[in-house]
Every structure is written in structure tokens, then in C-alpha cells.
Image (cartoon, rainbow, N blue to C red; front, side, top):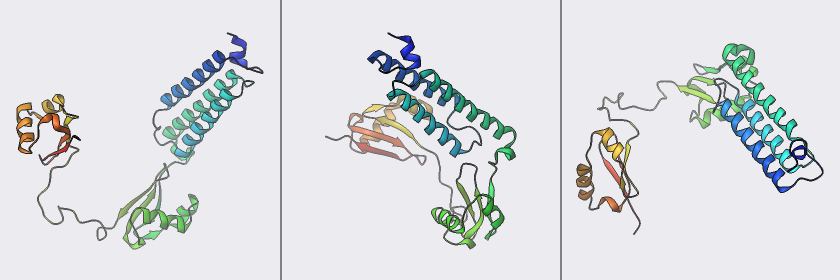
Length: 234
């Protein structure tokens, strides 16, 4: 094991040196990504992309090039991620400096050309983004805001908004994500306990559908109380 070759590189590397260099770089990138978090508050997504893509390229080039310095790669990676964290902090403290504040592009059906120019968006781009949000006419748009992440948020006028049960004065329906009761023929006892249900009750409900618990691939209970089952292949 040649430690000088490991850290500083050379004309050729042994199998052990290559393995250790790849391992060190891989876990360095993983650690830095964990430190950054899934996404810092308000940070520009493009900057995150540049950081991750650039550092992945730096790591890859050091993995395949035996003459490259592992120490230099670690310094580059640490510096880039530190700058990313610094930008995140500046964006949190001084959002105006970083320029990630939301920009209103449409207000009451009127396009704000000044803001459109600030974000370097053409009229065609705006219309395309509105169509993707199912707003096919400017008159339908109450407000359109370009978020710091680059996503366009659209609020339609009341006349163009979808009809809700409340508007039609219909009784409300329960909402929620439901819960898994049976997974691959096994009862999820913790979910039953959370819902205040018993396994004997579940067995009865499944038998009403003509099955046994072991025959069920997946059984879920919906907010309405309905139990949906998918049967295992026979």
C-alpha cells in the first residue's frame, strides 16, 4: 500500500489504491450532500444542480485518472459545497441580495412586462408555462408567480376555478391518505392499533369479499371506510 500514490496520484495505481480513492470520494460526496440537506430554504435550484453535477464530475475524473491528486479533489469538493451553504445562508438572511424572491408575472389577467424582463422570460415561454398549468387563456389567470425554484404558481379567477363540493352545497367527503391493513398476506397490526381496529374485524371484512387474509396482496382502508383489496396471484 503506497500512501503517497493514494493521496497524490502517480503514473499507475494498484487495485487497493483505486478502491480506496473511489471509496473516499464517494463518501465525501455523500457526506457533503447530507450536510446541504435535500434543499436549503430559498436556495436557487440551478445553483444546487451546478454544485452536485460539477462535484460529481470532479470525483469521477479523479477516480479514472491515476495521475490526479485526491487531496486536490477533496479540497475542491469541500470548497464548492461550502460556497453552496454560504449562498443558502445569504439567501436566508438577505434574499434580495441573492435575488430569489418570487416575481409576479400576471396580475388580474394582465401581464407585467417589467417583471417578465427581469426574469428573462419571453411571452411565449410564459404562455407555455400557463398551458402546462391548464390555464389556456390569460383571462383565466388571477395571479401567476415565478417562484425562486423556477416553478410557476398559478391562481385562477373564481369563474375559471374547478367546481367544488362546497360550491354545489354537497356534503363533505372524508379526506386523507388511508392506511395499509394487509401487505403481502400479513396484517399490519400497528396500523390496526392506530385506527382502533381489531384483527378479528379485519378477518370478517375480508371474508365478506370471499377471501382469506393470506390470499390478499394488499388491503387498504380509505378515508370513507371502504376497504380495497388486491388479490395475490395464484
